[in-house]
Image (cartoon, rainbow, N blue to C red; front, side, top):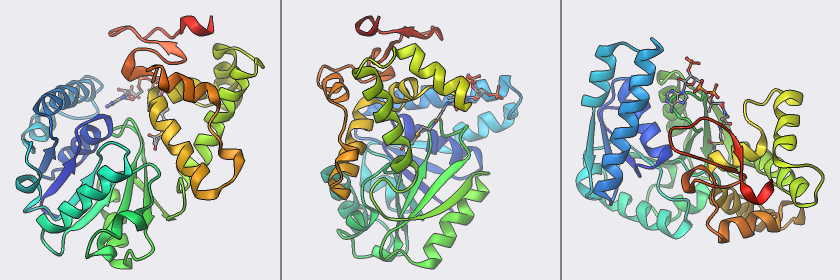
Length: 295
Ligand code: CAA
């Protein structure tokens, strides 16, 4: 792997670019919005500074990591020379299908096309390309520089060779790859999202309040964040769209999203990114304050 391209500069995209660049890979970070790219570089700078201050990386690594990242607003220019493309665009199937069609046309025929999708079928994404054997899921966890897991998802036609390359590459990034097959939600979200949905149902049905539910799971199960705080962190819209994939994919009512989650997303309370979800968020403050609606 000589050249990596990352599509989408949001939370996941900038974290993925950060990690590849930190481990010495030249990265083209691509987004349609120049503003989003500027913001992403700012986030990467901040996270690198934090790593330097915690002595996790040296000042030289910080500089080299930034030097390894080039930003692009033009997809074709950003992916032409890529050996691996990791797509981390918005979790929308039509958008992803369009991107993979374009990637198939714009990249070298031997390039591997990976998606960081949290639940959309890799087999479906691969079906719009002429290289389904080279399409794979490379699902990083947020925050990408911190979390060790890479869920490696084999589509129906993904080759052993491509799977082994992605497994090896994940290890080069000092991550722990876990190979899974392509079924709705894969493993991570098939297990995580029903837990989050059940926490929301517990709130909705008045079993307990926001802090109480999160405290039970933090102190009782040693989770670093309670499920409601984690839902805010992931994004309530993302949780909802993953639950819909599980519900549609299995046709099982146990995955039906809680009506409270649906309402919150419709009302624009999507968690950390909108400043309000189960908790309210003030920039610069780490204090966890329950949202007014749940007091
Ligand atoms: N970049 C680099 N380093 C970061 C970072 C970032 N973005 N965010 C946190 N860190 C580092 C901190 O510097 C700190 O390092 P040290 O241990 O060396 O001191 C460490 O991570 C812990 O951070 P904090 O002390 O600031 O805060 P914390 O102890 O509360 O941990 C957390 C924060 C790591 C996010 C922790 O709360 C956690 O693990 N939460 C759960 C995260 C999780 O479950 N992620 C998966 C979400 S699901 C997903 O991503 C996939 C999907 O498809 C939905």
